[in-house]
Structures are given as structure tokens and as C-alpha cells.
Amino acid sequence: MKQAIIAEKLSFAYPPAEDQPAVPVFDGISLSIEEGSFVAVLGHNGCGKSTLAKQCNAVLLPSGGSVTVYGMDTRMEALLYEIRRTVGMVFQNPDNQIVANVVEEDVAFAPENLGVPPQEIRSRVEEALRVVGMEDYRRHAPHLLSGGQKQRIAIAGVIAMRPKCIVLDEPTAMLDPQGRRDVMATIKRLNAEGITIVLITHHMSEAAEAQRVVVMAEGKIVADGKPGEVFSQVELLRGVGLGVPDTTALLYELRKCGYDLPLDALSVEECAQAILSHTF
Image (tube, rainbow, N blue to C red; front, side, top):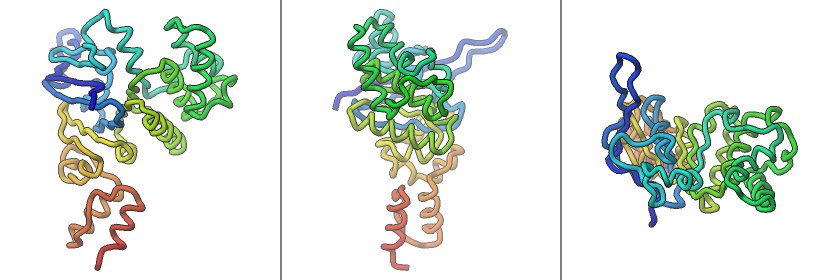
């Protein structure tokens, strides 16, 4: 399988403040992300996951080691334009990415700056709005939309650039439950259409929807695998201050009571079936 993003022995430290030492974030981590996959990077604030996200499209550059994006080394300044066309970024606050007073103009902003011909821009805007389910809002003012709708518009603006990969840095952190559901549905739809997804989150339920979960703590990768495999490591996760999905927590407590139940039944349906199938 082709690798979309490869970090090799990656180190990074933020520049020091006046009379202060540099702030190291991670030292020598390695990670590869397959093309077309949906990977969630999970961890508490300050663990390094957002810094890692910004390494994926050269918002930040390595202090040591390397990051390769579809074969392009992010340290090569001449490749910066192509890297950012290839890997789109969606940030936590959609208001920071919305630049126009009309939805369709906002979605058109990036391809216009890329020099895409007007007819092609119109096609891309229509397609991007359709993908995120916002085609009926094309002439609306973005500031009048809900948080979830704004975030979907921000995602549409990235889609219009035709990236191969989208990195989303806690895109649901400022949203209500319905907004989170809408954004997660959009993310899964994009992945189903072949776009590589890297989702930075601290929500267990969101990470459980990914194909693979990478857990970070204090700048290190402490777990990496399928959601069921990772969340089965209850003590490890609790040891780094993280919880587990409610279904896993229930099954874990039942196992402590002596019931031989699987810990990888993540959905409510799978959990209920595991309990119903057990002989008590």
C-alpha cells in the first residue's frame, strides 16, 4: 500500500522565549499513514498531536528527522506550494478559515488563488458544496450559519483544492453534538471517496469511527492500531489520562466482575450483542 505521509525520527521544538529554553514537543517519533486510510490521532491537549498535524503540510518544519508527503520532503521550500495543494488543513475554529461574505465565494477563494480557470472553479465549488451537504446555502452569509455548518464550509474550501489528504485539527471541538455528528458524517464520506483523512481529536467516540487510532502522550506514540485493539488497552489509556468509549468501559467493568466479554465491541449494537450472547 502506498504511504501518504511518512514521519521518520521526527523531532521538533518551539523556539525559546526570551531567557527561556526551547520547548521540545517530540524527539524521534516515526509514523506512516497509508493512502486512502482514515487515521485518528488521539491525546490530551499538550501531547503534541496538533504539532504533528501541522508537520503534515509544512505549517511547521522538523527540527530533526523528516516528514515526507506523497514523496515530497516538507523541508524543500520549492515543494511547499505542491505540498499544501496535496494536503489540506482544517482547523478547530472555522471562523479563522472563512474569508468571504458569501458561502460560494469563500469556497472559491483557494482555487482562485491557485489560478484555476473560472469555469473549473464553478464546477469545483458546486462539487465541494454537494459533498459536504451545503449546496442549498451557496448564497448565504457564512457568519449567519451554525458552527457545524461553518465547519462544513471550511471543509468545502479545502475540498475545492482537490487535495489527496485532509488533516483536521480538532474540527468538532467548538461544536454542539449535532454539529459534531454532521462533521463526522462529512469526514467519513470524504474518506469513502478515497481521500486520506488524518483526524486530530480528544473525543473517544470520534476516534472509534476511524480505521486506525494513534495515541499520543507527552510527545510520544504510546499506542497504534485498530480502534478495538487500542481501546482494549484500558489501563494503558487511563495511565496517560485518557478514557475509553462508554461501551468499552462497561465491558471492562463486567470483565472485572468475572464475565468473559470482549473489549473490542465499540458500538452500542456490538456491545449489546456481546452481552446478550454471553451466558451469565
